[in-house]
Amino acid sequence: MAERLYLVAEERITDYDGDLEDYARWLTERRRAPGQCAPGRRPRTGEGGRARRQASAQHRQRLKPLRQELARLEAELARLGGQQAALEEALADAAVYQDDARDRLKSLLVDRGRVERALGGRVGGRVGWAAGERLERIQADNGEE
Image (cartoon, rainbow, N blue to C red; front, side, top):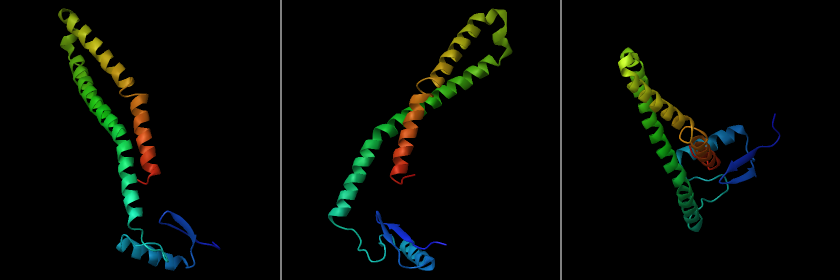
């Protein structure tokens, strides 16, 4: 059984004088009325709100290049995935393995290798993964989804 309760709200940690039932009531009331503060605290307004909005805007600006890079990489992955599917379909055709289609087969195999290298390299590899991980980490640190 807990001997002390702490309230974590409004970017602060304070001792909580109530019991768990009081906390449940406070939490329910707070969810119904966003903008409510912890018990005994006044809502932040004025310059504090403005500063938070500015910080939020700056945060979004810092994330913008990462989001753009991820969007570009996702588009490139989609394009390469489409090419890969078309190449696999062409390679599944028995006619491409006939003697008179050697040049076509060679071209398809070269293209498939190029696409697979691109998917395993910069686009689908560490760069894309690292950008996604970095964006997710920043969003998690800031309580975003």
